[in-house]
Amino acid sequence: MVQSNRARFDPRLRAVVIARRPLVYDAGADAMVDRPAHVRAGSGLARVAGRLVVVQDDASFLALLSPEGAVAAVTLPHVVEGRRQFEPARGNKRHKLDLEACVSLPDGRILALGSGSSAARTRVVFADFRVDGAPPVVTLRDVPALYAALENERRFSGSELNVEGAAVLPALGVLRLFQRGNGARRGGRVPVDATCDLALDAALRYLDDASAPVPALRDVAQWALGELEGTRLGFTDACATADRVFFLAAAEASPNAYDDGGVSGVVLGVTDGLAAACGARLARLEDPDGTPFRMKAEGLALDPADPRRALAVLDVDDATRPAELCELRLEGPWWETR
Image (cartoon, rainbow, N blue to C red; front, side):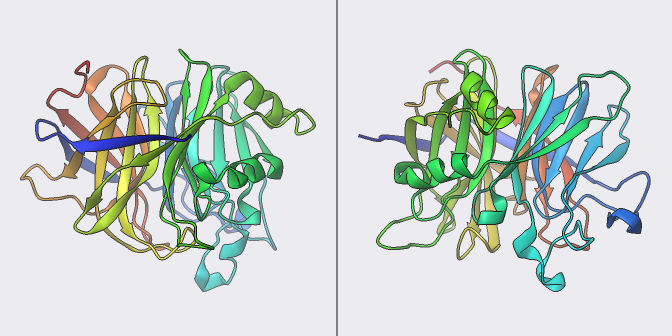
């Protein structure tokens, strides 16, 4: 029997957008590697070695943000016909990695995961930051067996697989994956928002060596996140603290897990604990004057020095415009023990 969890809006909570910054590479564009001048479609965010790492779902680059504000690019070993940017206008969207989740590992690496929403999106990227002062060592791995296991677990994948978030929970020794239920109905199956856990050690053994056993999926939990203005909310990212999980969910009227749609708004949520079976509290992202914030936030990181501050990456769904780094101020009893 699958666990069913429910999120509820808590009127005591606020998540206020207090600053936004377009993410433009300091070095500009580079036609030799098909790099644009800006970060495109920011989809995941993680902290490592004092920096922020942004993954992008339609360009084969990582962005590294220094504490001083510099934005550098790391080229990924994924290029198709000389292209590292993928979009409908180029006719090559089907080739993109669709990296949608990004998490910092205890060993000093970053793990970015494809969404699994098509055969081309069943790959992961490791970026190794363990050598001080050196560029990260980047590895691309094709792991279709893991995504097949996620797809076949219909309690997790529902009608269309779309992995949008990941979080490491050291206290439980697990890697938790977040499925976004923005797919279309198929074959009598409905889209679901869900989480599942993989034992972290087993997951890393497999991801480092695909000949190792595929890690078992456990503690599948489906989530009722509610809706905004008639559009259902779906997970877009997550991150964990020592005793709870924070997540983003967007109300996007997308027709399926492959195409984008209009965004009614975004919420920040916090779970009541680390267990797969728990509830969560929500607050809608808003501007300082209380106006609902309607841009899609897809990456989330907390400030370890300030529990009232969080960062999010905004995906503007426009290849000509840079993704933005957004600062959130958290007001109210976010850290309340339930």
